[in-house]
Image (cartoon, rainbow, N blue to C red; front, side):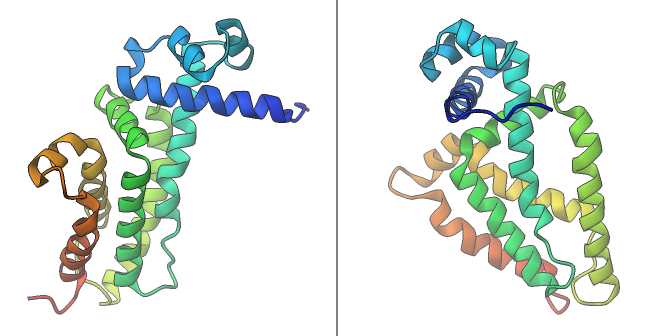
Length: 204
């Protein structure tokens, strides 16, 4: 059995992962180096290698932690809840992630754009399983006439694209809106209105 980490080990591991997130999100996997990560974490390179044996190991740990964060809002959709409100709550949770974790969103997007070499097994496994599970819930609500008939998986894709856009294309969004406007101030109400009309059985 693996011994639990000491507080110092926990602190150093977090420092490495936080530094790695910053370096990878700035330079990509290929451009990042262990020296950059170690310097930002305030550790020597040999000390870093005590915790993670390679750059790949640091990157994989960051992506694994990130994927769990990314999937949690989808897990929270409650089959016993009111359909439209459940989907809208999911939209707001995803938008909040984009606001609070922009570097993580861009890192995830970059990994996928590269063909997801470090994440493909997780995408084809746990992510796909969860999406299929929630798509079944959505389809059940549609079959009961409790929300509009839509392709359930593409509905989930649309939530991803319309919320993560604010993080992945932050520079473009802010340049278009202007320097004095926070993109997230109006985004929540706009997406709520748009999805509510899309999901409503009685929408015209």
